[in-house]
Length: 378
Image 1 (tube, helix red, strand yellow):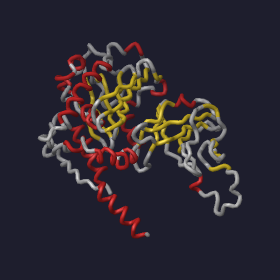
Image 2 (tube, one colour):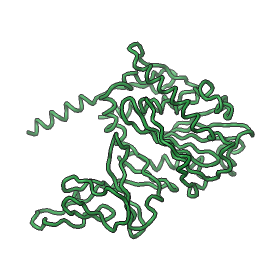
Image 3 (cartoon, one colour):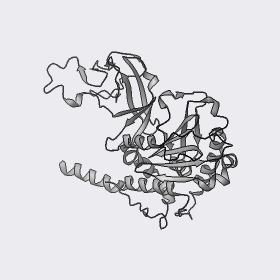
Image 4 (cartoon, one colour):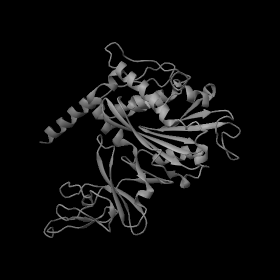
């Protein structure tokens, strides 16, 4: 029996074994092959190898602003579909726990609202708001019960201003990503940023999710695709900086466009910065403008379809119209046209791989290297 189990594990490892090779030197590197974007098995394996090894946006802290309040959520619905519950206990501490009962796997919470504990409606098992096992009827004769595994799985949670992030894998150091962003945007009062539902929107794009990220990660296409954005930004000075699990694109401008008022000691003091574009592996973008923040969450739906959620957090509304982020909807539609065309082009039987522009596509090269690294792991 143990032999059969080991054999199944071995077969699965062979099935999931990949050998994507992205040369570390961009001058010599080739892109991921076209098959990466059109293979159903690869798309499926990305769940385990990439998304379950990273962090995701979990919502706004104001969604659970009262003590003894709960809110169910599904991380990357229609792809991961990981059921979770955000809770705020009587001590005002926020938790994120599994929404799957440890008895028979029932979904515990279907609706948010006030709650002092979590009770499964199937057989009455109860949990504290931090996920700890509390009570189970008709189990007095069960031996070695309760065990630690009878409590709900607790996910690591990080709050940054009003933003909440949940970890699917603790080995991914998400706090270091936030700290890296703070080096440039830490002077902004993010605690004062307010979610604006009117300026927030979902877009459905007929493309592979990674192609949407590819497009975001380079300013190379700006002069050819975004005429208005190209006028707002100085393409010649557009720069990219790479870090461990994130990277930064800096959009500079002249005095005609709203730019940041940078404090003393800031690394870009004296420069006219119109936007800081942070990408966080694998699928989150944080676009900081003088008026606030636009978060883009790229959500895989299928091999050929992606949802992109634009979440706007406004700090100074008076600066929106004159900023580089004033035409977010127009820029998005232009990007959709391009990435949908690329998605169709990659279905060609005669496309294999491409090359990177060493000057303009460092971010895409970085993304492809990370994807290859995560996919190649046992």
